[in-house]
Amino acid sequence: MTGFLRLGVNIDHVATVRNARGAGYPDPVRAALLAAEAGADGITAHLREDRRHITDDDIARLAAELTIPLNLEMAATDEMLAIALRHRPHAACIVPEKREEVTTEGGLDAAGQFARLEPLVGQLRDAGIRVSLFIEPDARQIDAAIRLGAPVVELHTGRYAELDGEARTEELRRLSDAAALAAKNGIEVHAGHGLTFDNVGPIAAIPQVRELNIGHFLIGEALFVGLDDAVRRMRDAMDVARG
Image (tube, rainbow, N blue to C red):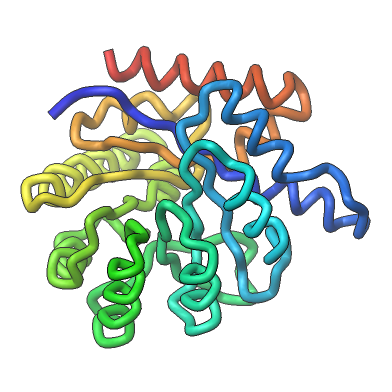
């Protein structure tokens, strides 16, 4: 399986900068629109329980103003389910969430939380929202995604991004094997977390991966070169790796 690889741009940390001063700027919705102009295929935003960056108003505005798909990252809670059902984003990616974490740490335990996830996935699916599960590259988690009827999994690449040498090679093999297993069972494969210009190539080259979601690095790079340039350069790096 080969073909075009989509880029989803996560704009959470534009909101982080805004919220540091409690001002109305920089505006994450403006960033989303600029990313779309630069070639992003979708926009990702994580509405956390503590609203540390993206807010409810941001989600409402993104849903109203975007002309490319909105991917809402959300915890498996009744509150977030209600918000997703109200705004009907193109996709909802269910992620683990802990108040004390700096960023999402590891993948969702879809196997261990199967009973909690099953009705939630069903309600999202019935509302026409494409469900994605953010999981580790592990056969047990992929099996849970299959049984839950999730059409998409997003493989957590954070461990890959932190490793080097033989350890990184081994983690890349795990990601490749997981992508192949998911695709073989009819699940679309996405990947993300910790990806940069320097490490995106091997992930982008995995033929079963259809979309990468990248945020923190692109927003950081935008401070130096502008968001347009950062998105275009990532798009180019992905295309080169895809061959």
